[in-house]
Each structure stands twice: as C-alpha cells, then as structure tokens.
Image 1: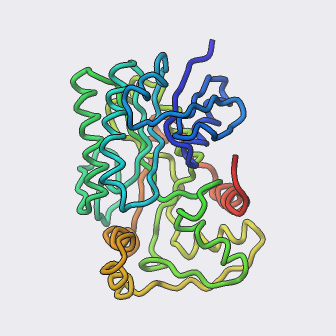
Image 2: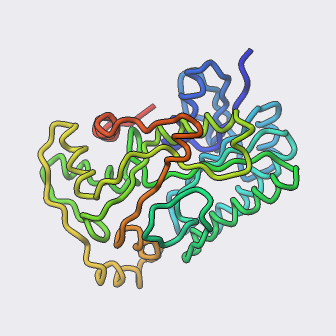
Length: 311
C-alpha cells in the first residue's frame, strides 16, 4: 500500500521530488495556487499554502509534507516567507506529517572553508537570517516533540528545468549562440553546484528515516567547478563551443544596487562569488548512501533540460 506525500511548490525541486516519489510507487499530491501543474501520476491541488487551514486539509493523512517553495523574487521574501513558513509548521503539527524542507546555503553566511552540516548559521543578510530563523523554529518545535522536521540544503542549482534563475542556466540561451557570458564575482573560483535531481533524491530519502530527523543534511554534490568551467562543461555537453566569460565589475554591481532593489538583494550575496563557495556533502554520502549524479550526466541534463520546458 502506497503512502501519501504532499509537496508545496512546483519549481524544479518540487517537480523532481514528485517524480522521484512516484517512481517508487508512492501517492503524491502537488499543492500550488493554480492547481494546474501536470505531472504524470501526480494529483494536483489548488490551495493557498500560506493558509494553514487550507494546507492542513491538503496534507491530511500525509506521511510527509515537503516545503519545496522558492520565491524567485528576493524583494518579496520578507512578505512571502513568514506566513508560508508558519502555515507549514501548523499543518505539520495538525496532521502529524513530517516536515521536510528544501533549503539553501544562505543561512551559513560568508565563509571561506567548505560548509559542513552542524556549523553555526551566521548569515549577514536578511535573506540568510530569514531562512536560518525558519529552520531554528522548526528545530525548536521538533525538539519539543510538537512536530517532526528535517532540512536539506543544496548549493546553486543545475540540472533539468532550472531555467533563467540558475547562475549557469541563465547564460545558456545567449551562450549557445556564441555570445559572451557576464557573471557576478570572479569567474575562476571554485563553486559548488547541486543537481536538482540529487536535491529531490535526498528529500525523499530523509522523509522516511526517523534517524535523519531533527537536523540539517547536505544534498550530495559533485566536486566544485568555477563558473567558467561549469558553463563550459554544460555547453560542451550540448555540443556547443565555449564562450568568453567576463566578470561584472563589483563597482557596477554596487552602483546598480543603489537604484535597483533586486540588484541590492543580489549584491548582499556577492560573497558567494568573490571567494571559494564549497559545500561538503561527505556526511550525507557516508550516512545515507547517496552519491551525486556524475558530473558529465549533470551537464547533459542541464544542457538538454533548459532550452525547452520540463514537465
């Protein structure tokens, strides 16, 4: 008899998580505002996930409730995340579903050493502090026995369906036409890239392992590649020649940040691109037995899965 899993968010992580769960024979419900997202074998439900009553109804009887939401407009995070995060906590407590959250590395803040699970969250920008606070509250309720919670963090996404929000994939439409890419920060620093499929596989794995709950895990991630190397590898996987990769001058970025709210949010995270930014996923690999998708395959999926819609 299959279990029921409820996923909030129909971006690349939510879609891949739904597909991973369906592939192993589970019943999956995808919650979006429109309810119009179609994935084979997945029930699509229209609900406002920020409404705890509506979300609790959608999650009734679920084994796990996945938070795969990812507001792409940084300028709206302070308005969007607090009610959504609270609703997820309430729904998890009311229904008994394990809350499984897909998160990022922002809570750790600026760092030069590889990031490992268990290191303190020390974010310096409001987005990182917000995400760190979300996990701190979920962990507190988990420790108090009110809910079961677990969080998976990944680095910048590559893979199928990432689209224009990815730091590699946003360059593909122009780069496949031979046009140069302009990137934030230094193009040749080591940087970790997490395949959205590997993020989904980890979310599905921890949802069913009580020994994994109450802590943060890192999605299995390949050895770091620079922005230049990652883009060049993805282009090669799609049979395209490399293109010049230039750095956007930091002075120009800061100038844009003065007048453009979105660029201001991006500038706050510029530390990710001006020093090595490396995720260590050894603990996940050793404990959960999950390995990252081989880099060549990641590049192929990234190349073929971002020039046409996925799903």
